[in-house]
Image (tube, rainbow, N blue to C red; front, side, top):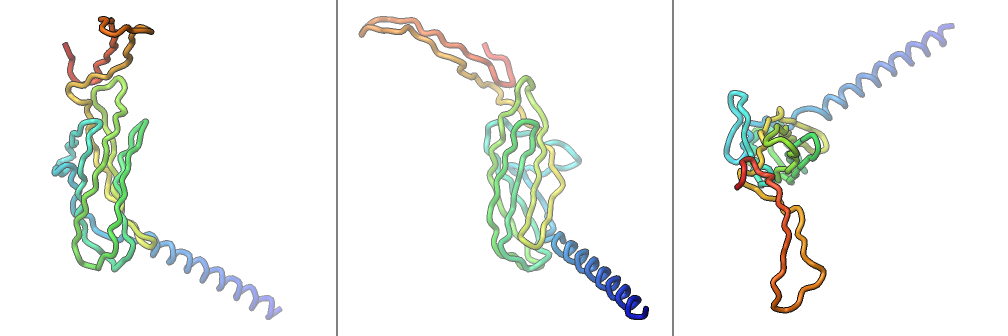
Length: 184
């Protein structure tokens, strides 16, 4: 009877130790790697919850300034634009960081052209700094994506089946205004 109670106590003790070890392992694996001080999109910081405007199809620079909270190796930064139809992301290798030191990395990201009938829409920009042991995510930044001001898409070009040298021939061109403003 006493060996049965000792076994129950030992099993309970081992279960509690295992659970505590798991909780400590999870908290260490998900602790913060850096403090992100600023994120600028084409030199503009989000302030007072105002959206930053960008133009669909263009490439923008994303500058991330951060301070390391840990000594870490193989650190990476990822910037991702999340839309309803298309996502765009870029990832760069930072390397080693030292606790208490500040770093700046600039990423270049292609703004997706996913506007169909709208002239503008919002996309969320997420920034993540991580390695195998730590991870820091920056609160999403809302980007207002606009169509280019004046942009014409060529839908089709049609000509006759045969053409003789020196002959004038008709060409049918179908254009679509895919810009923000009306075209004449």
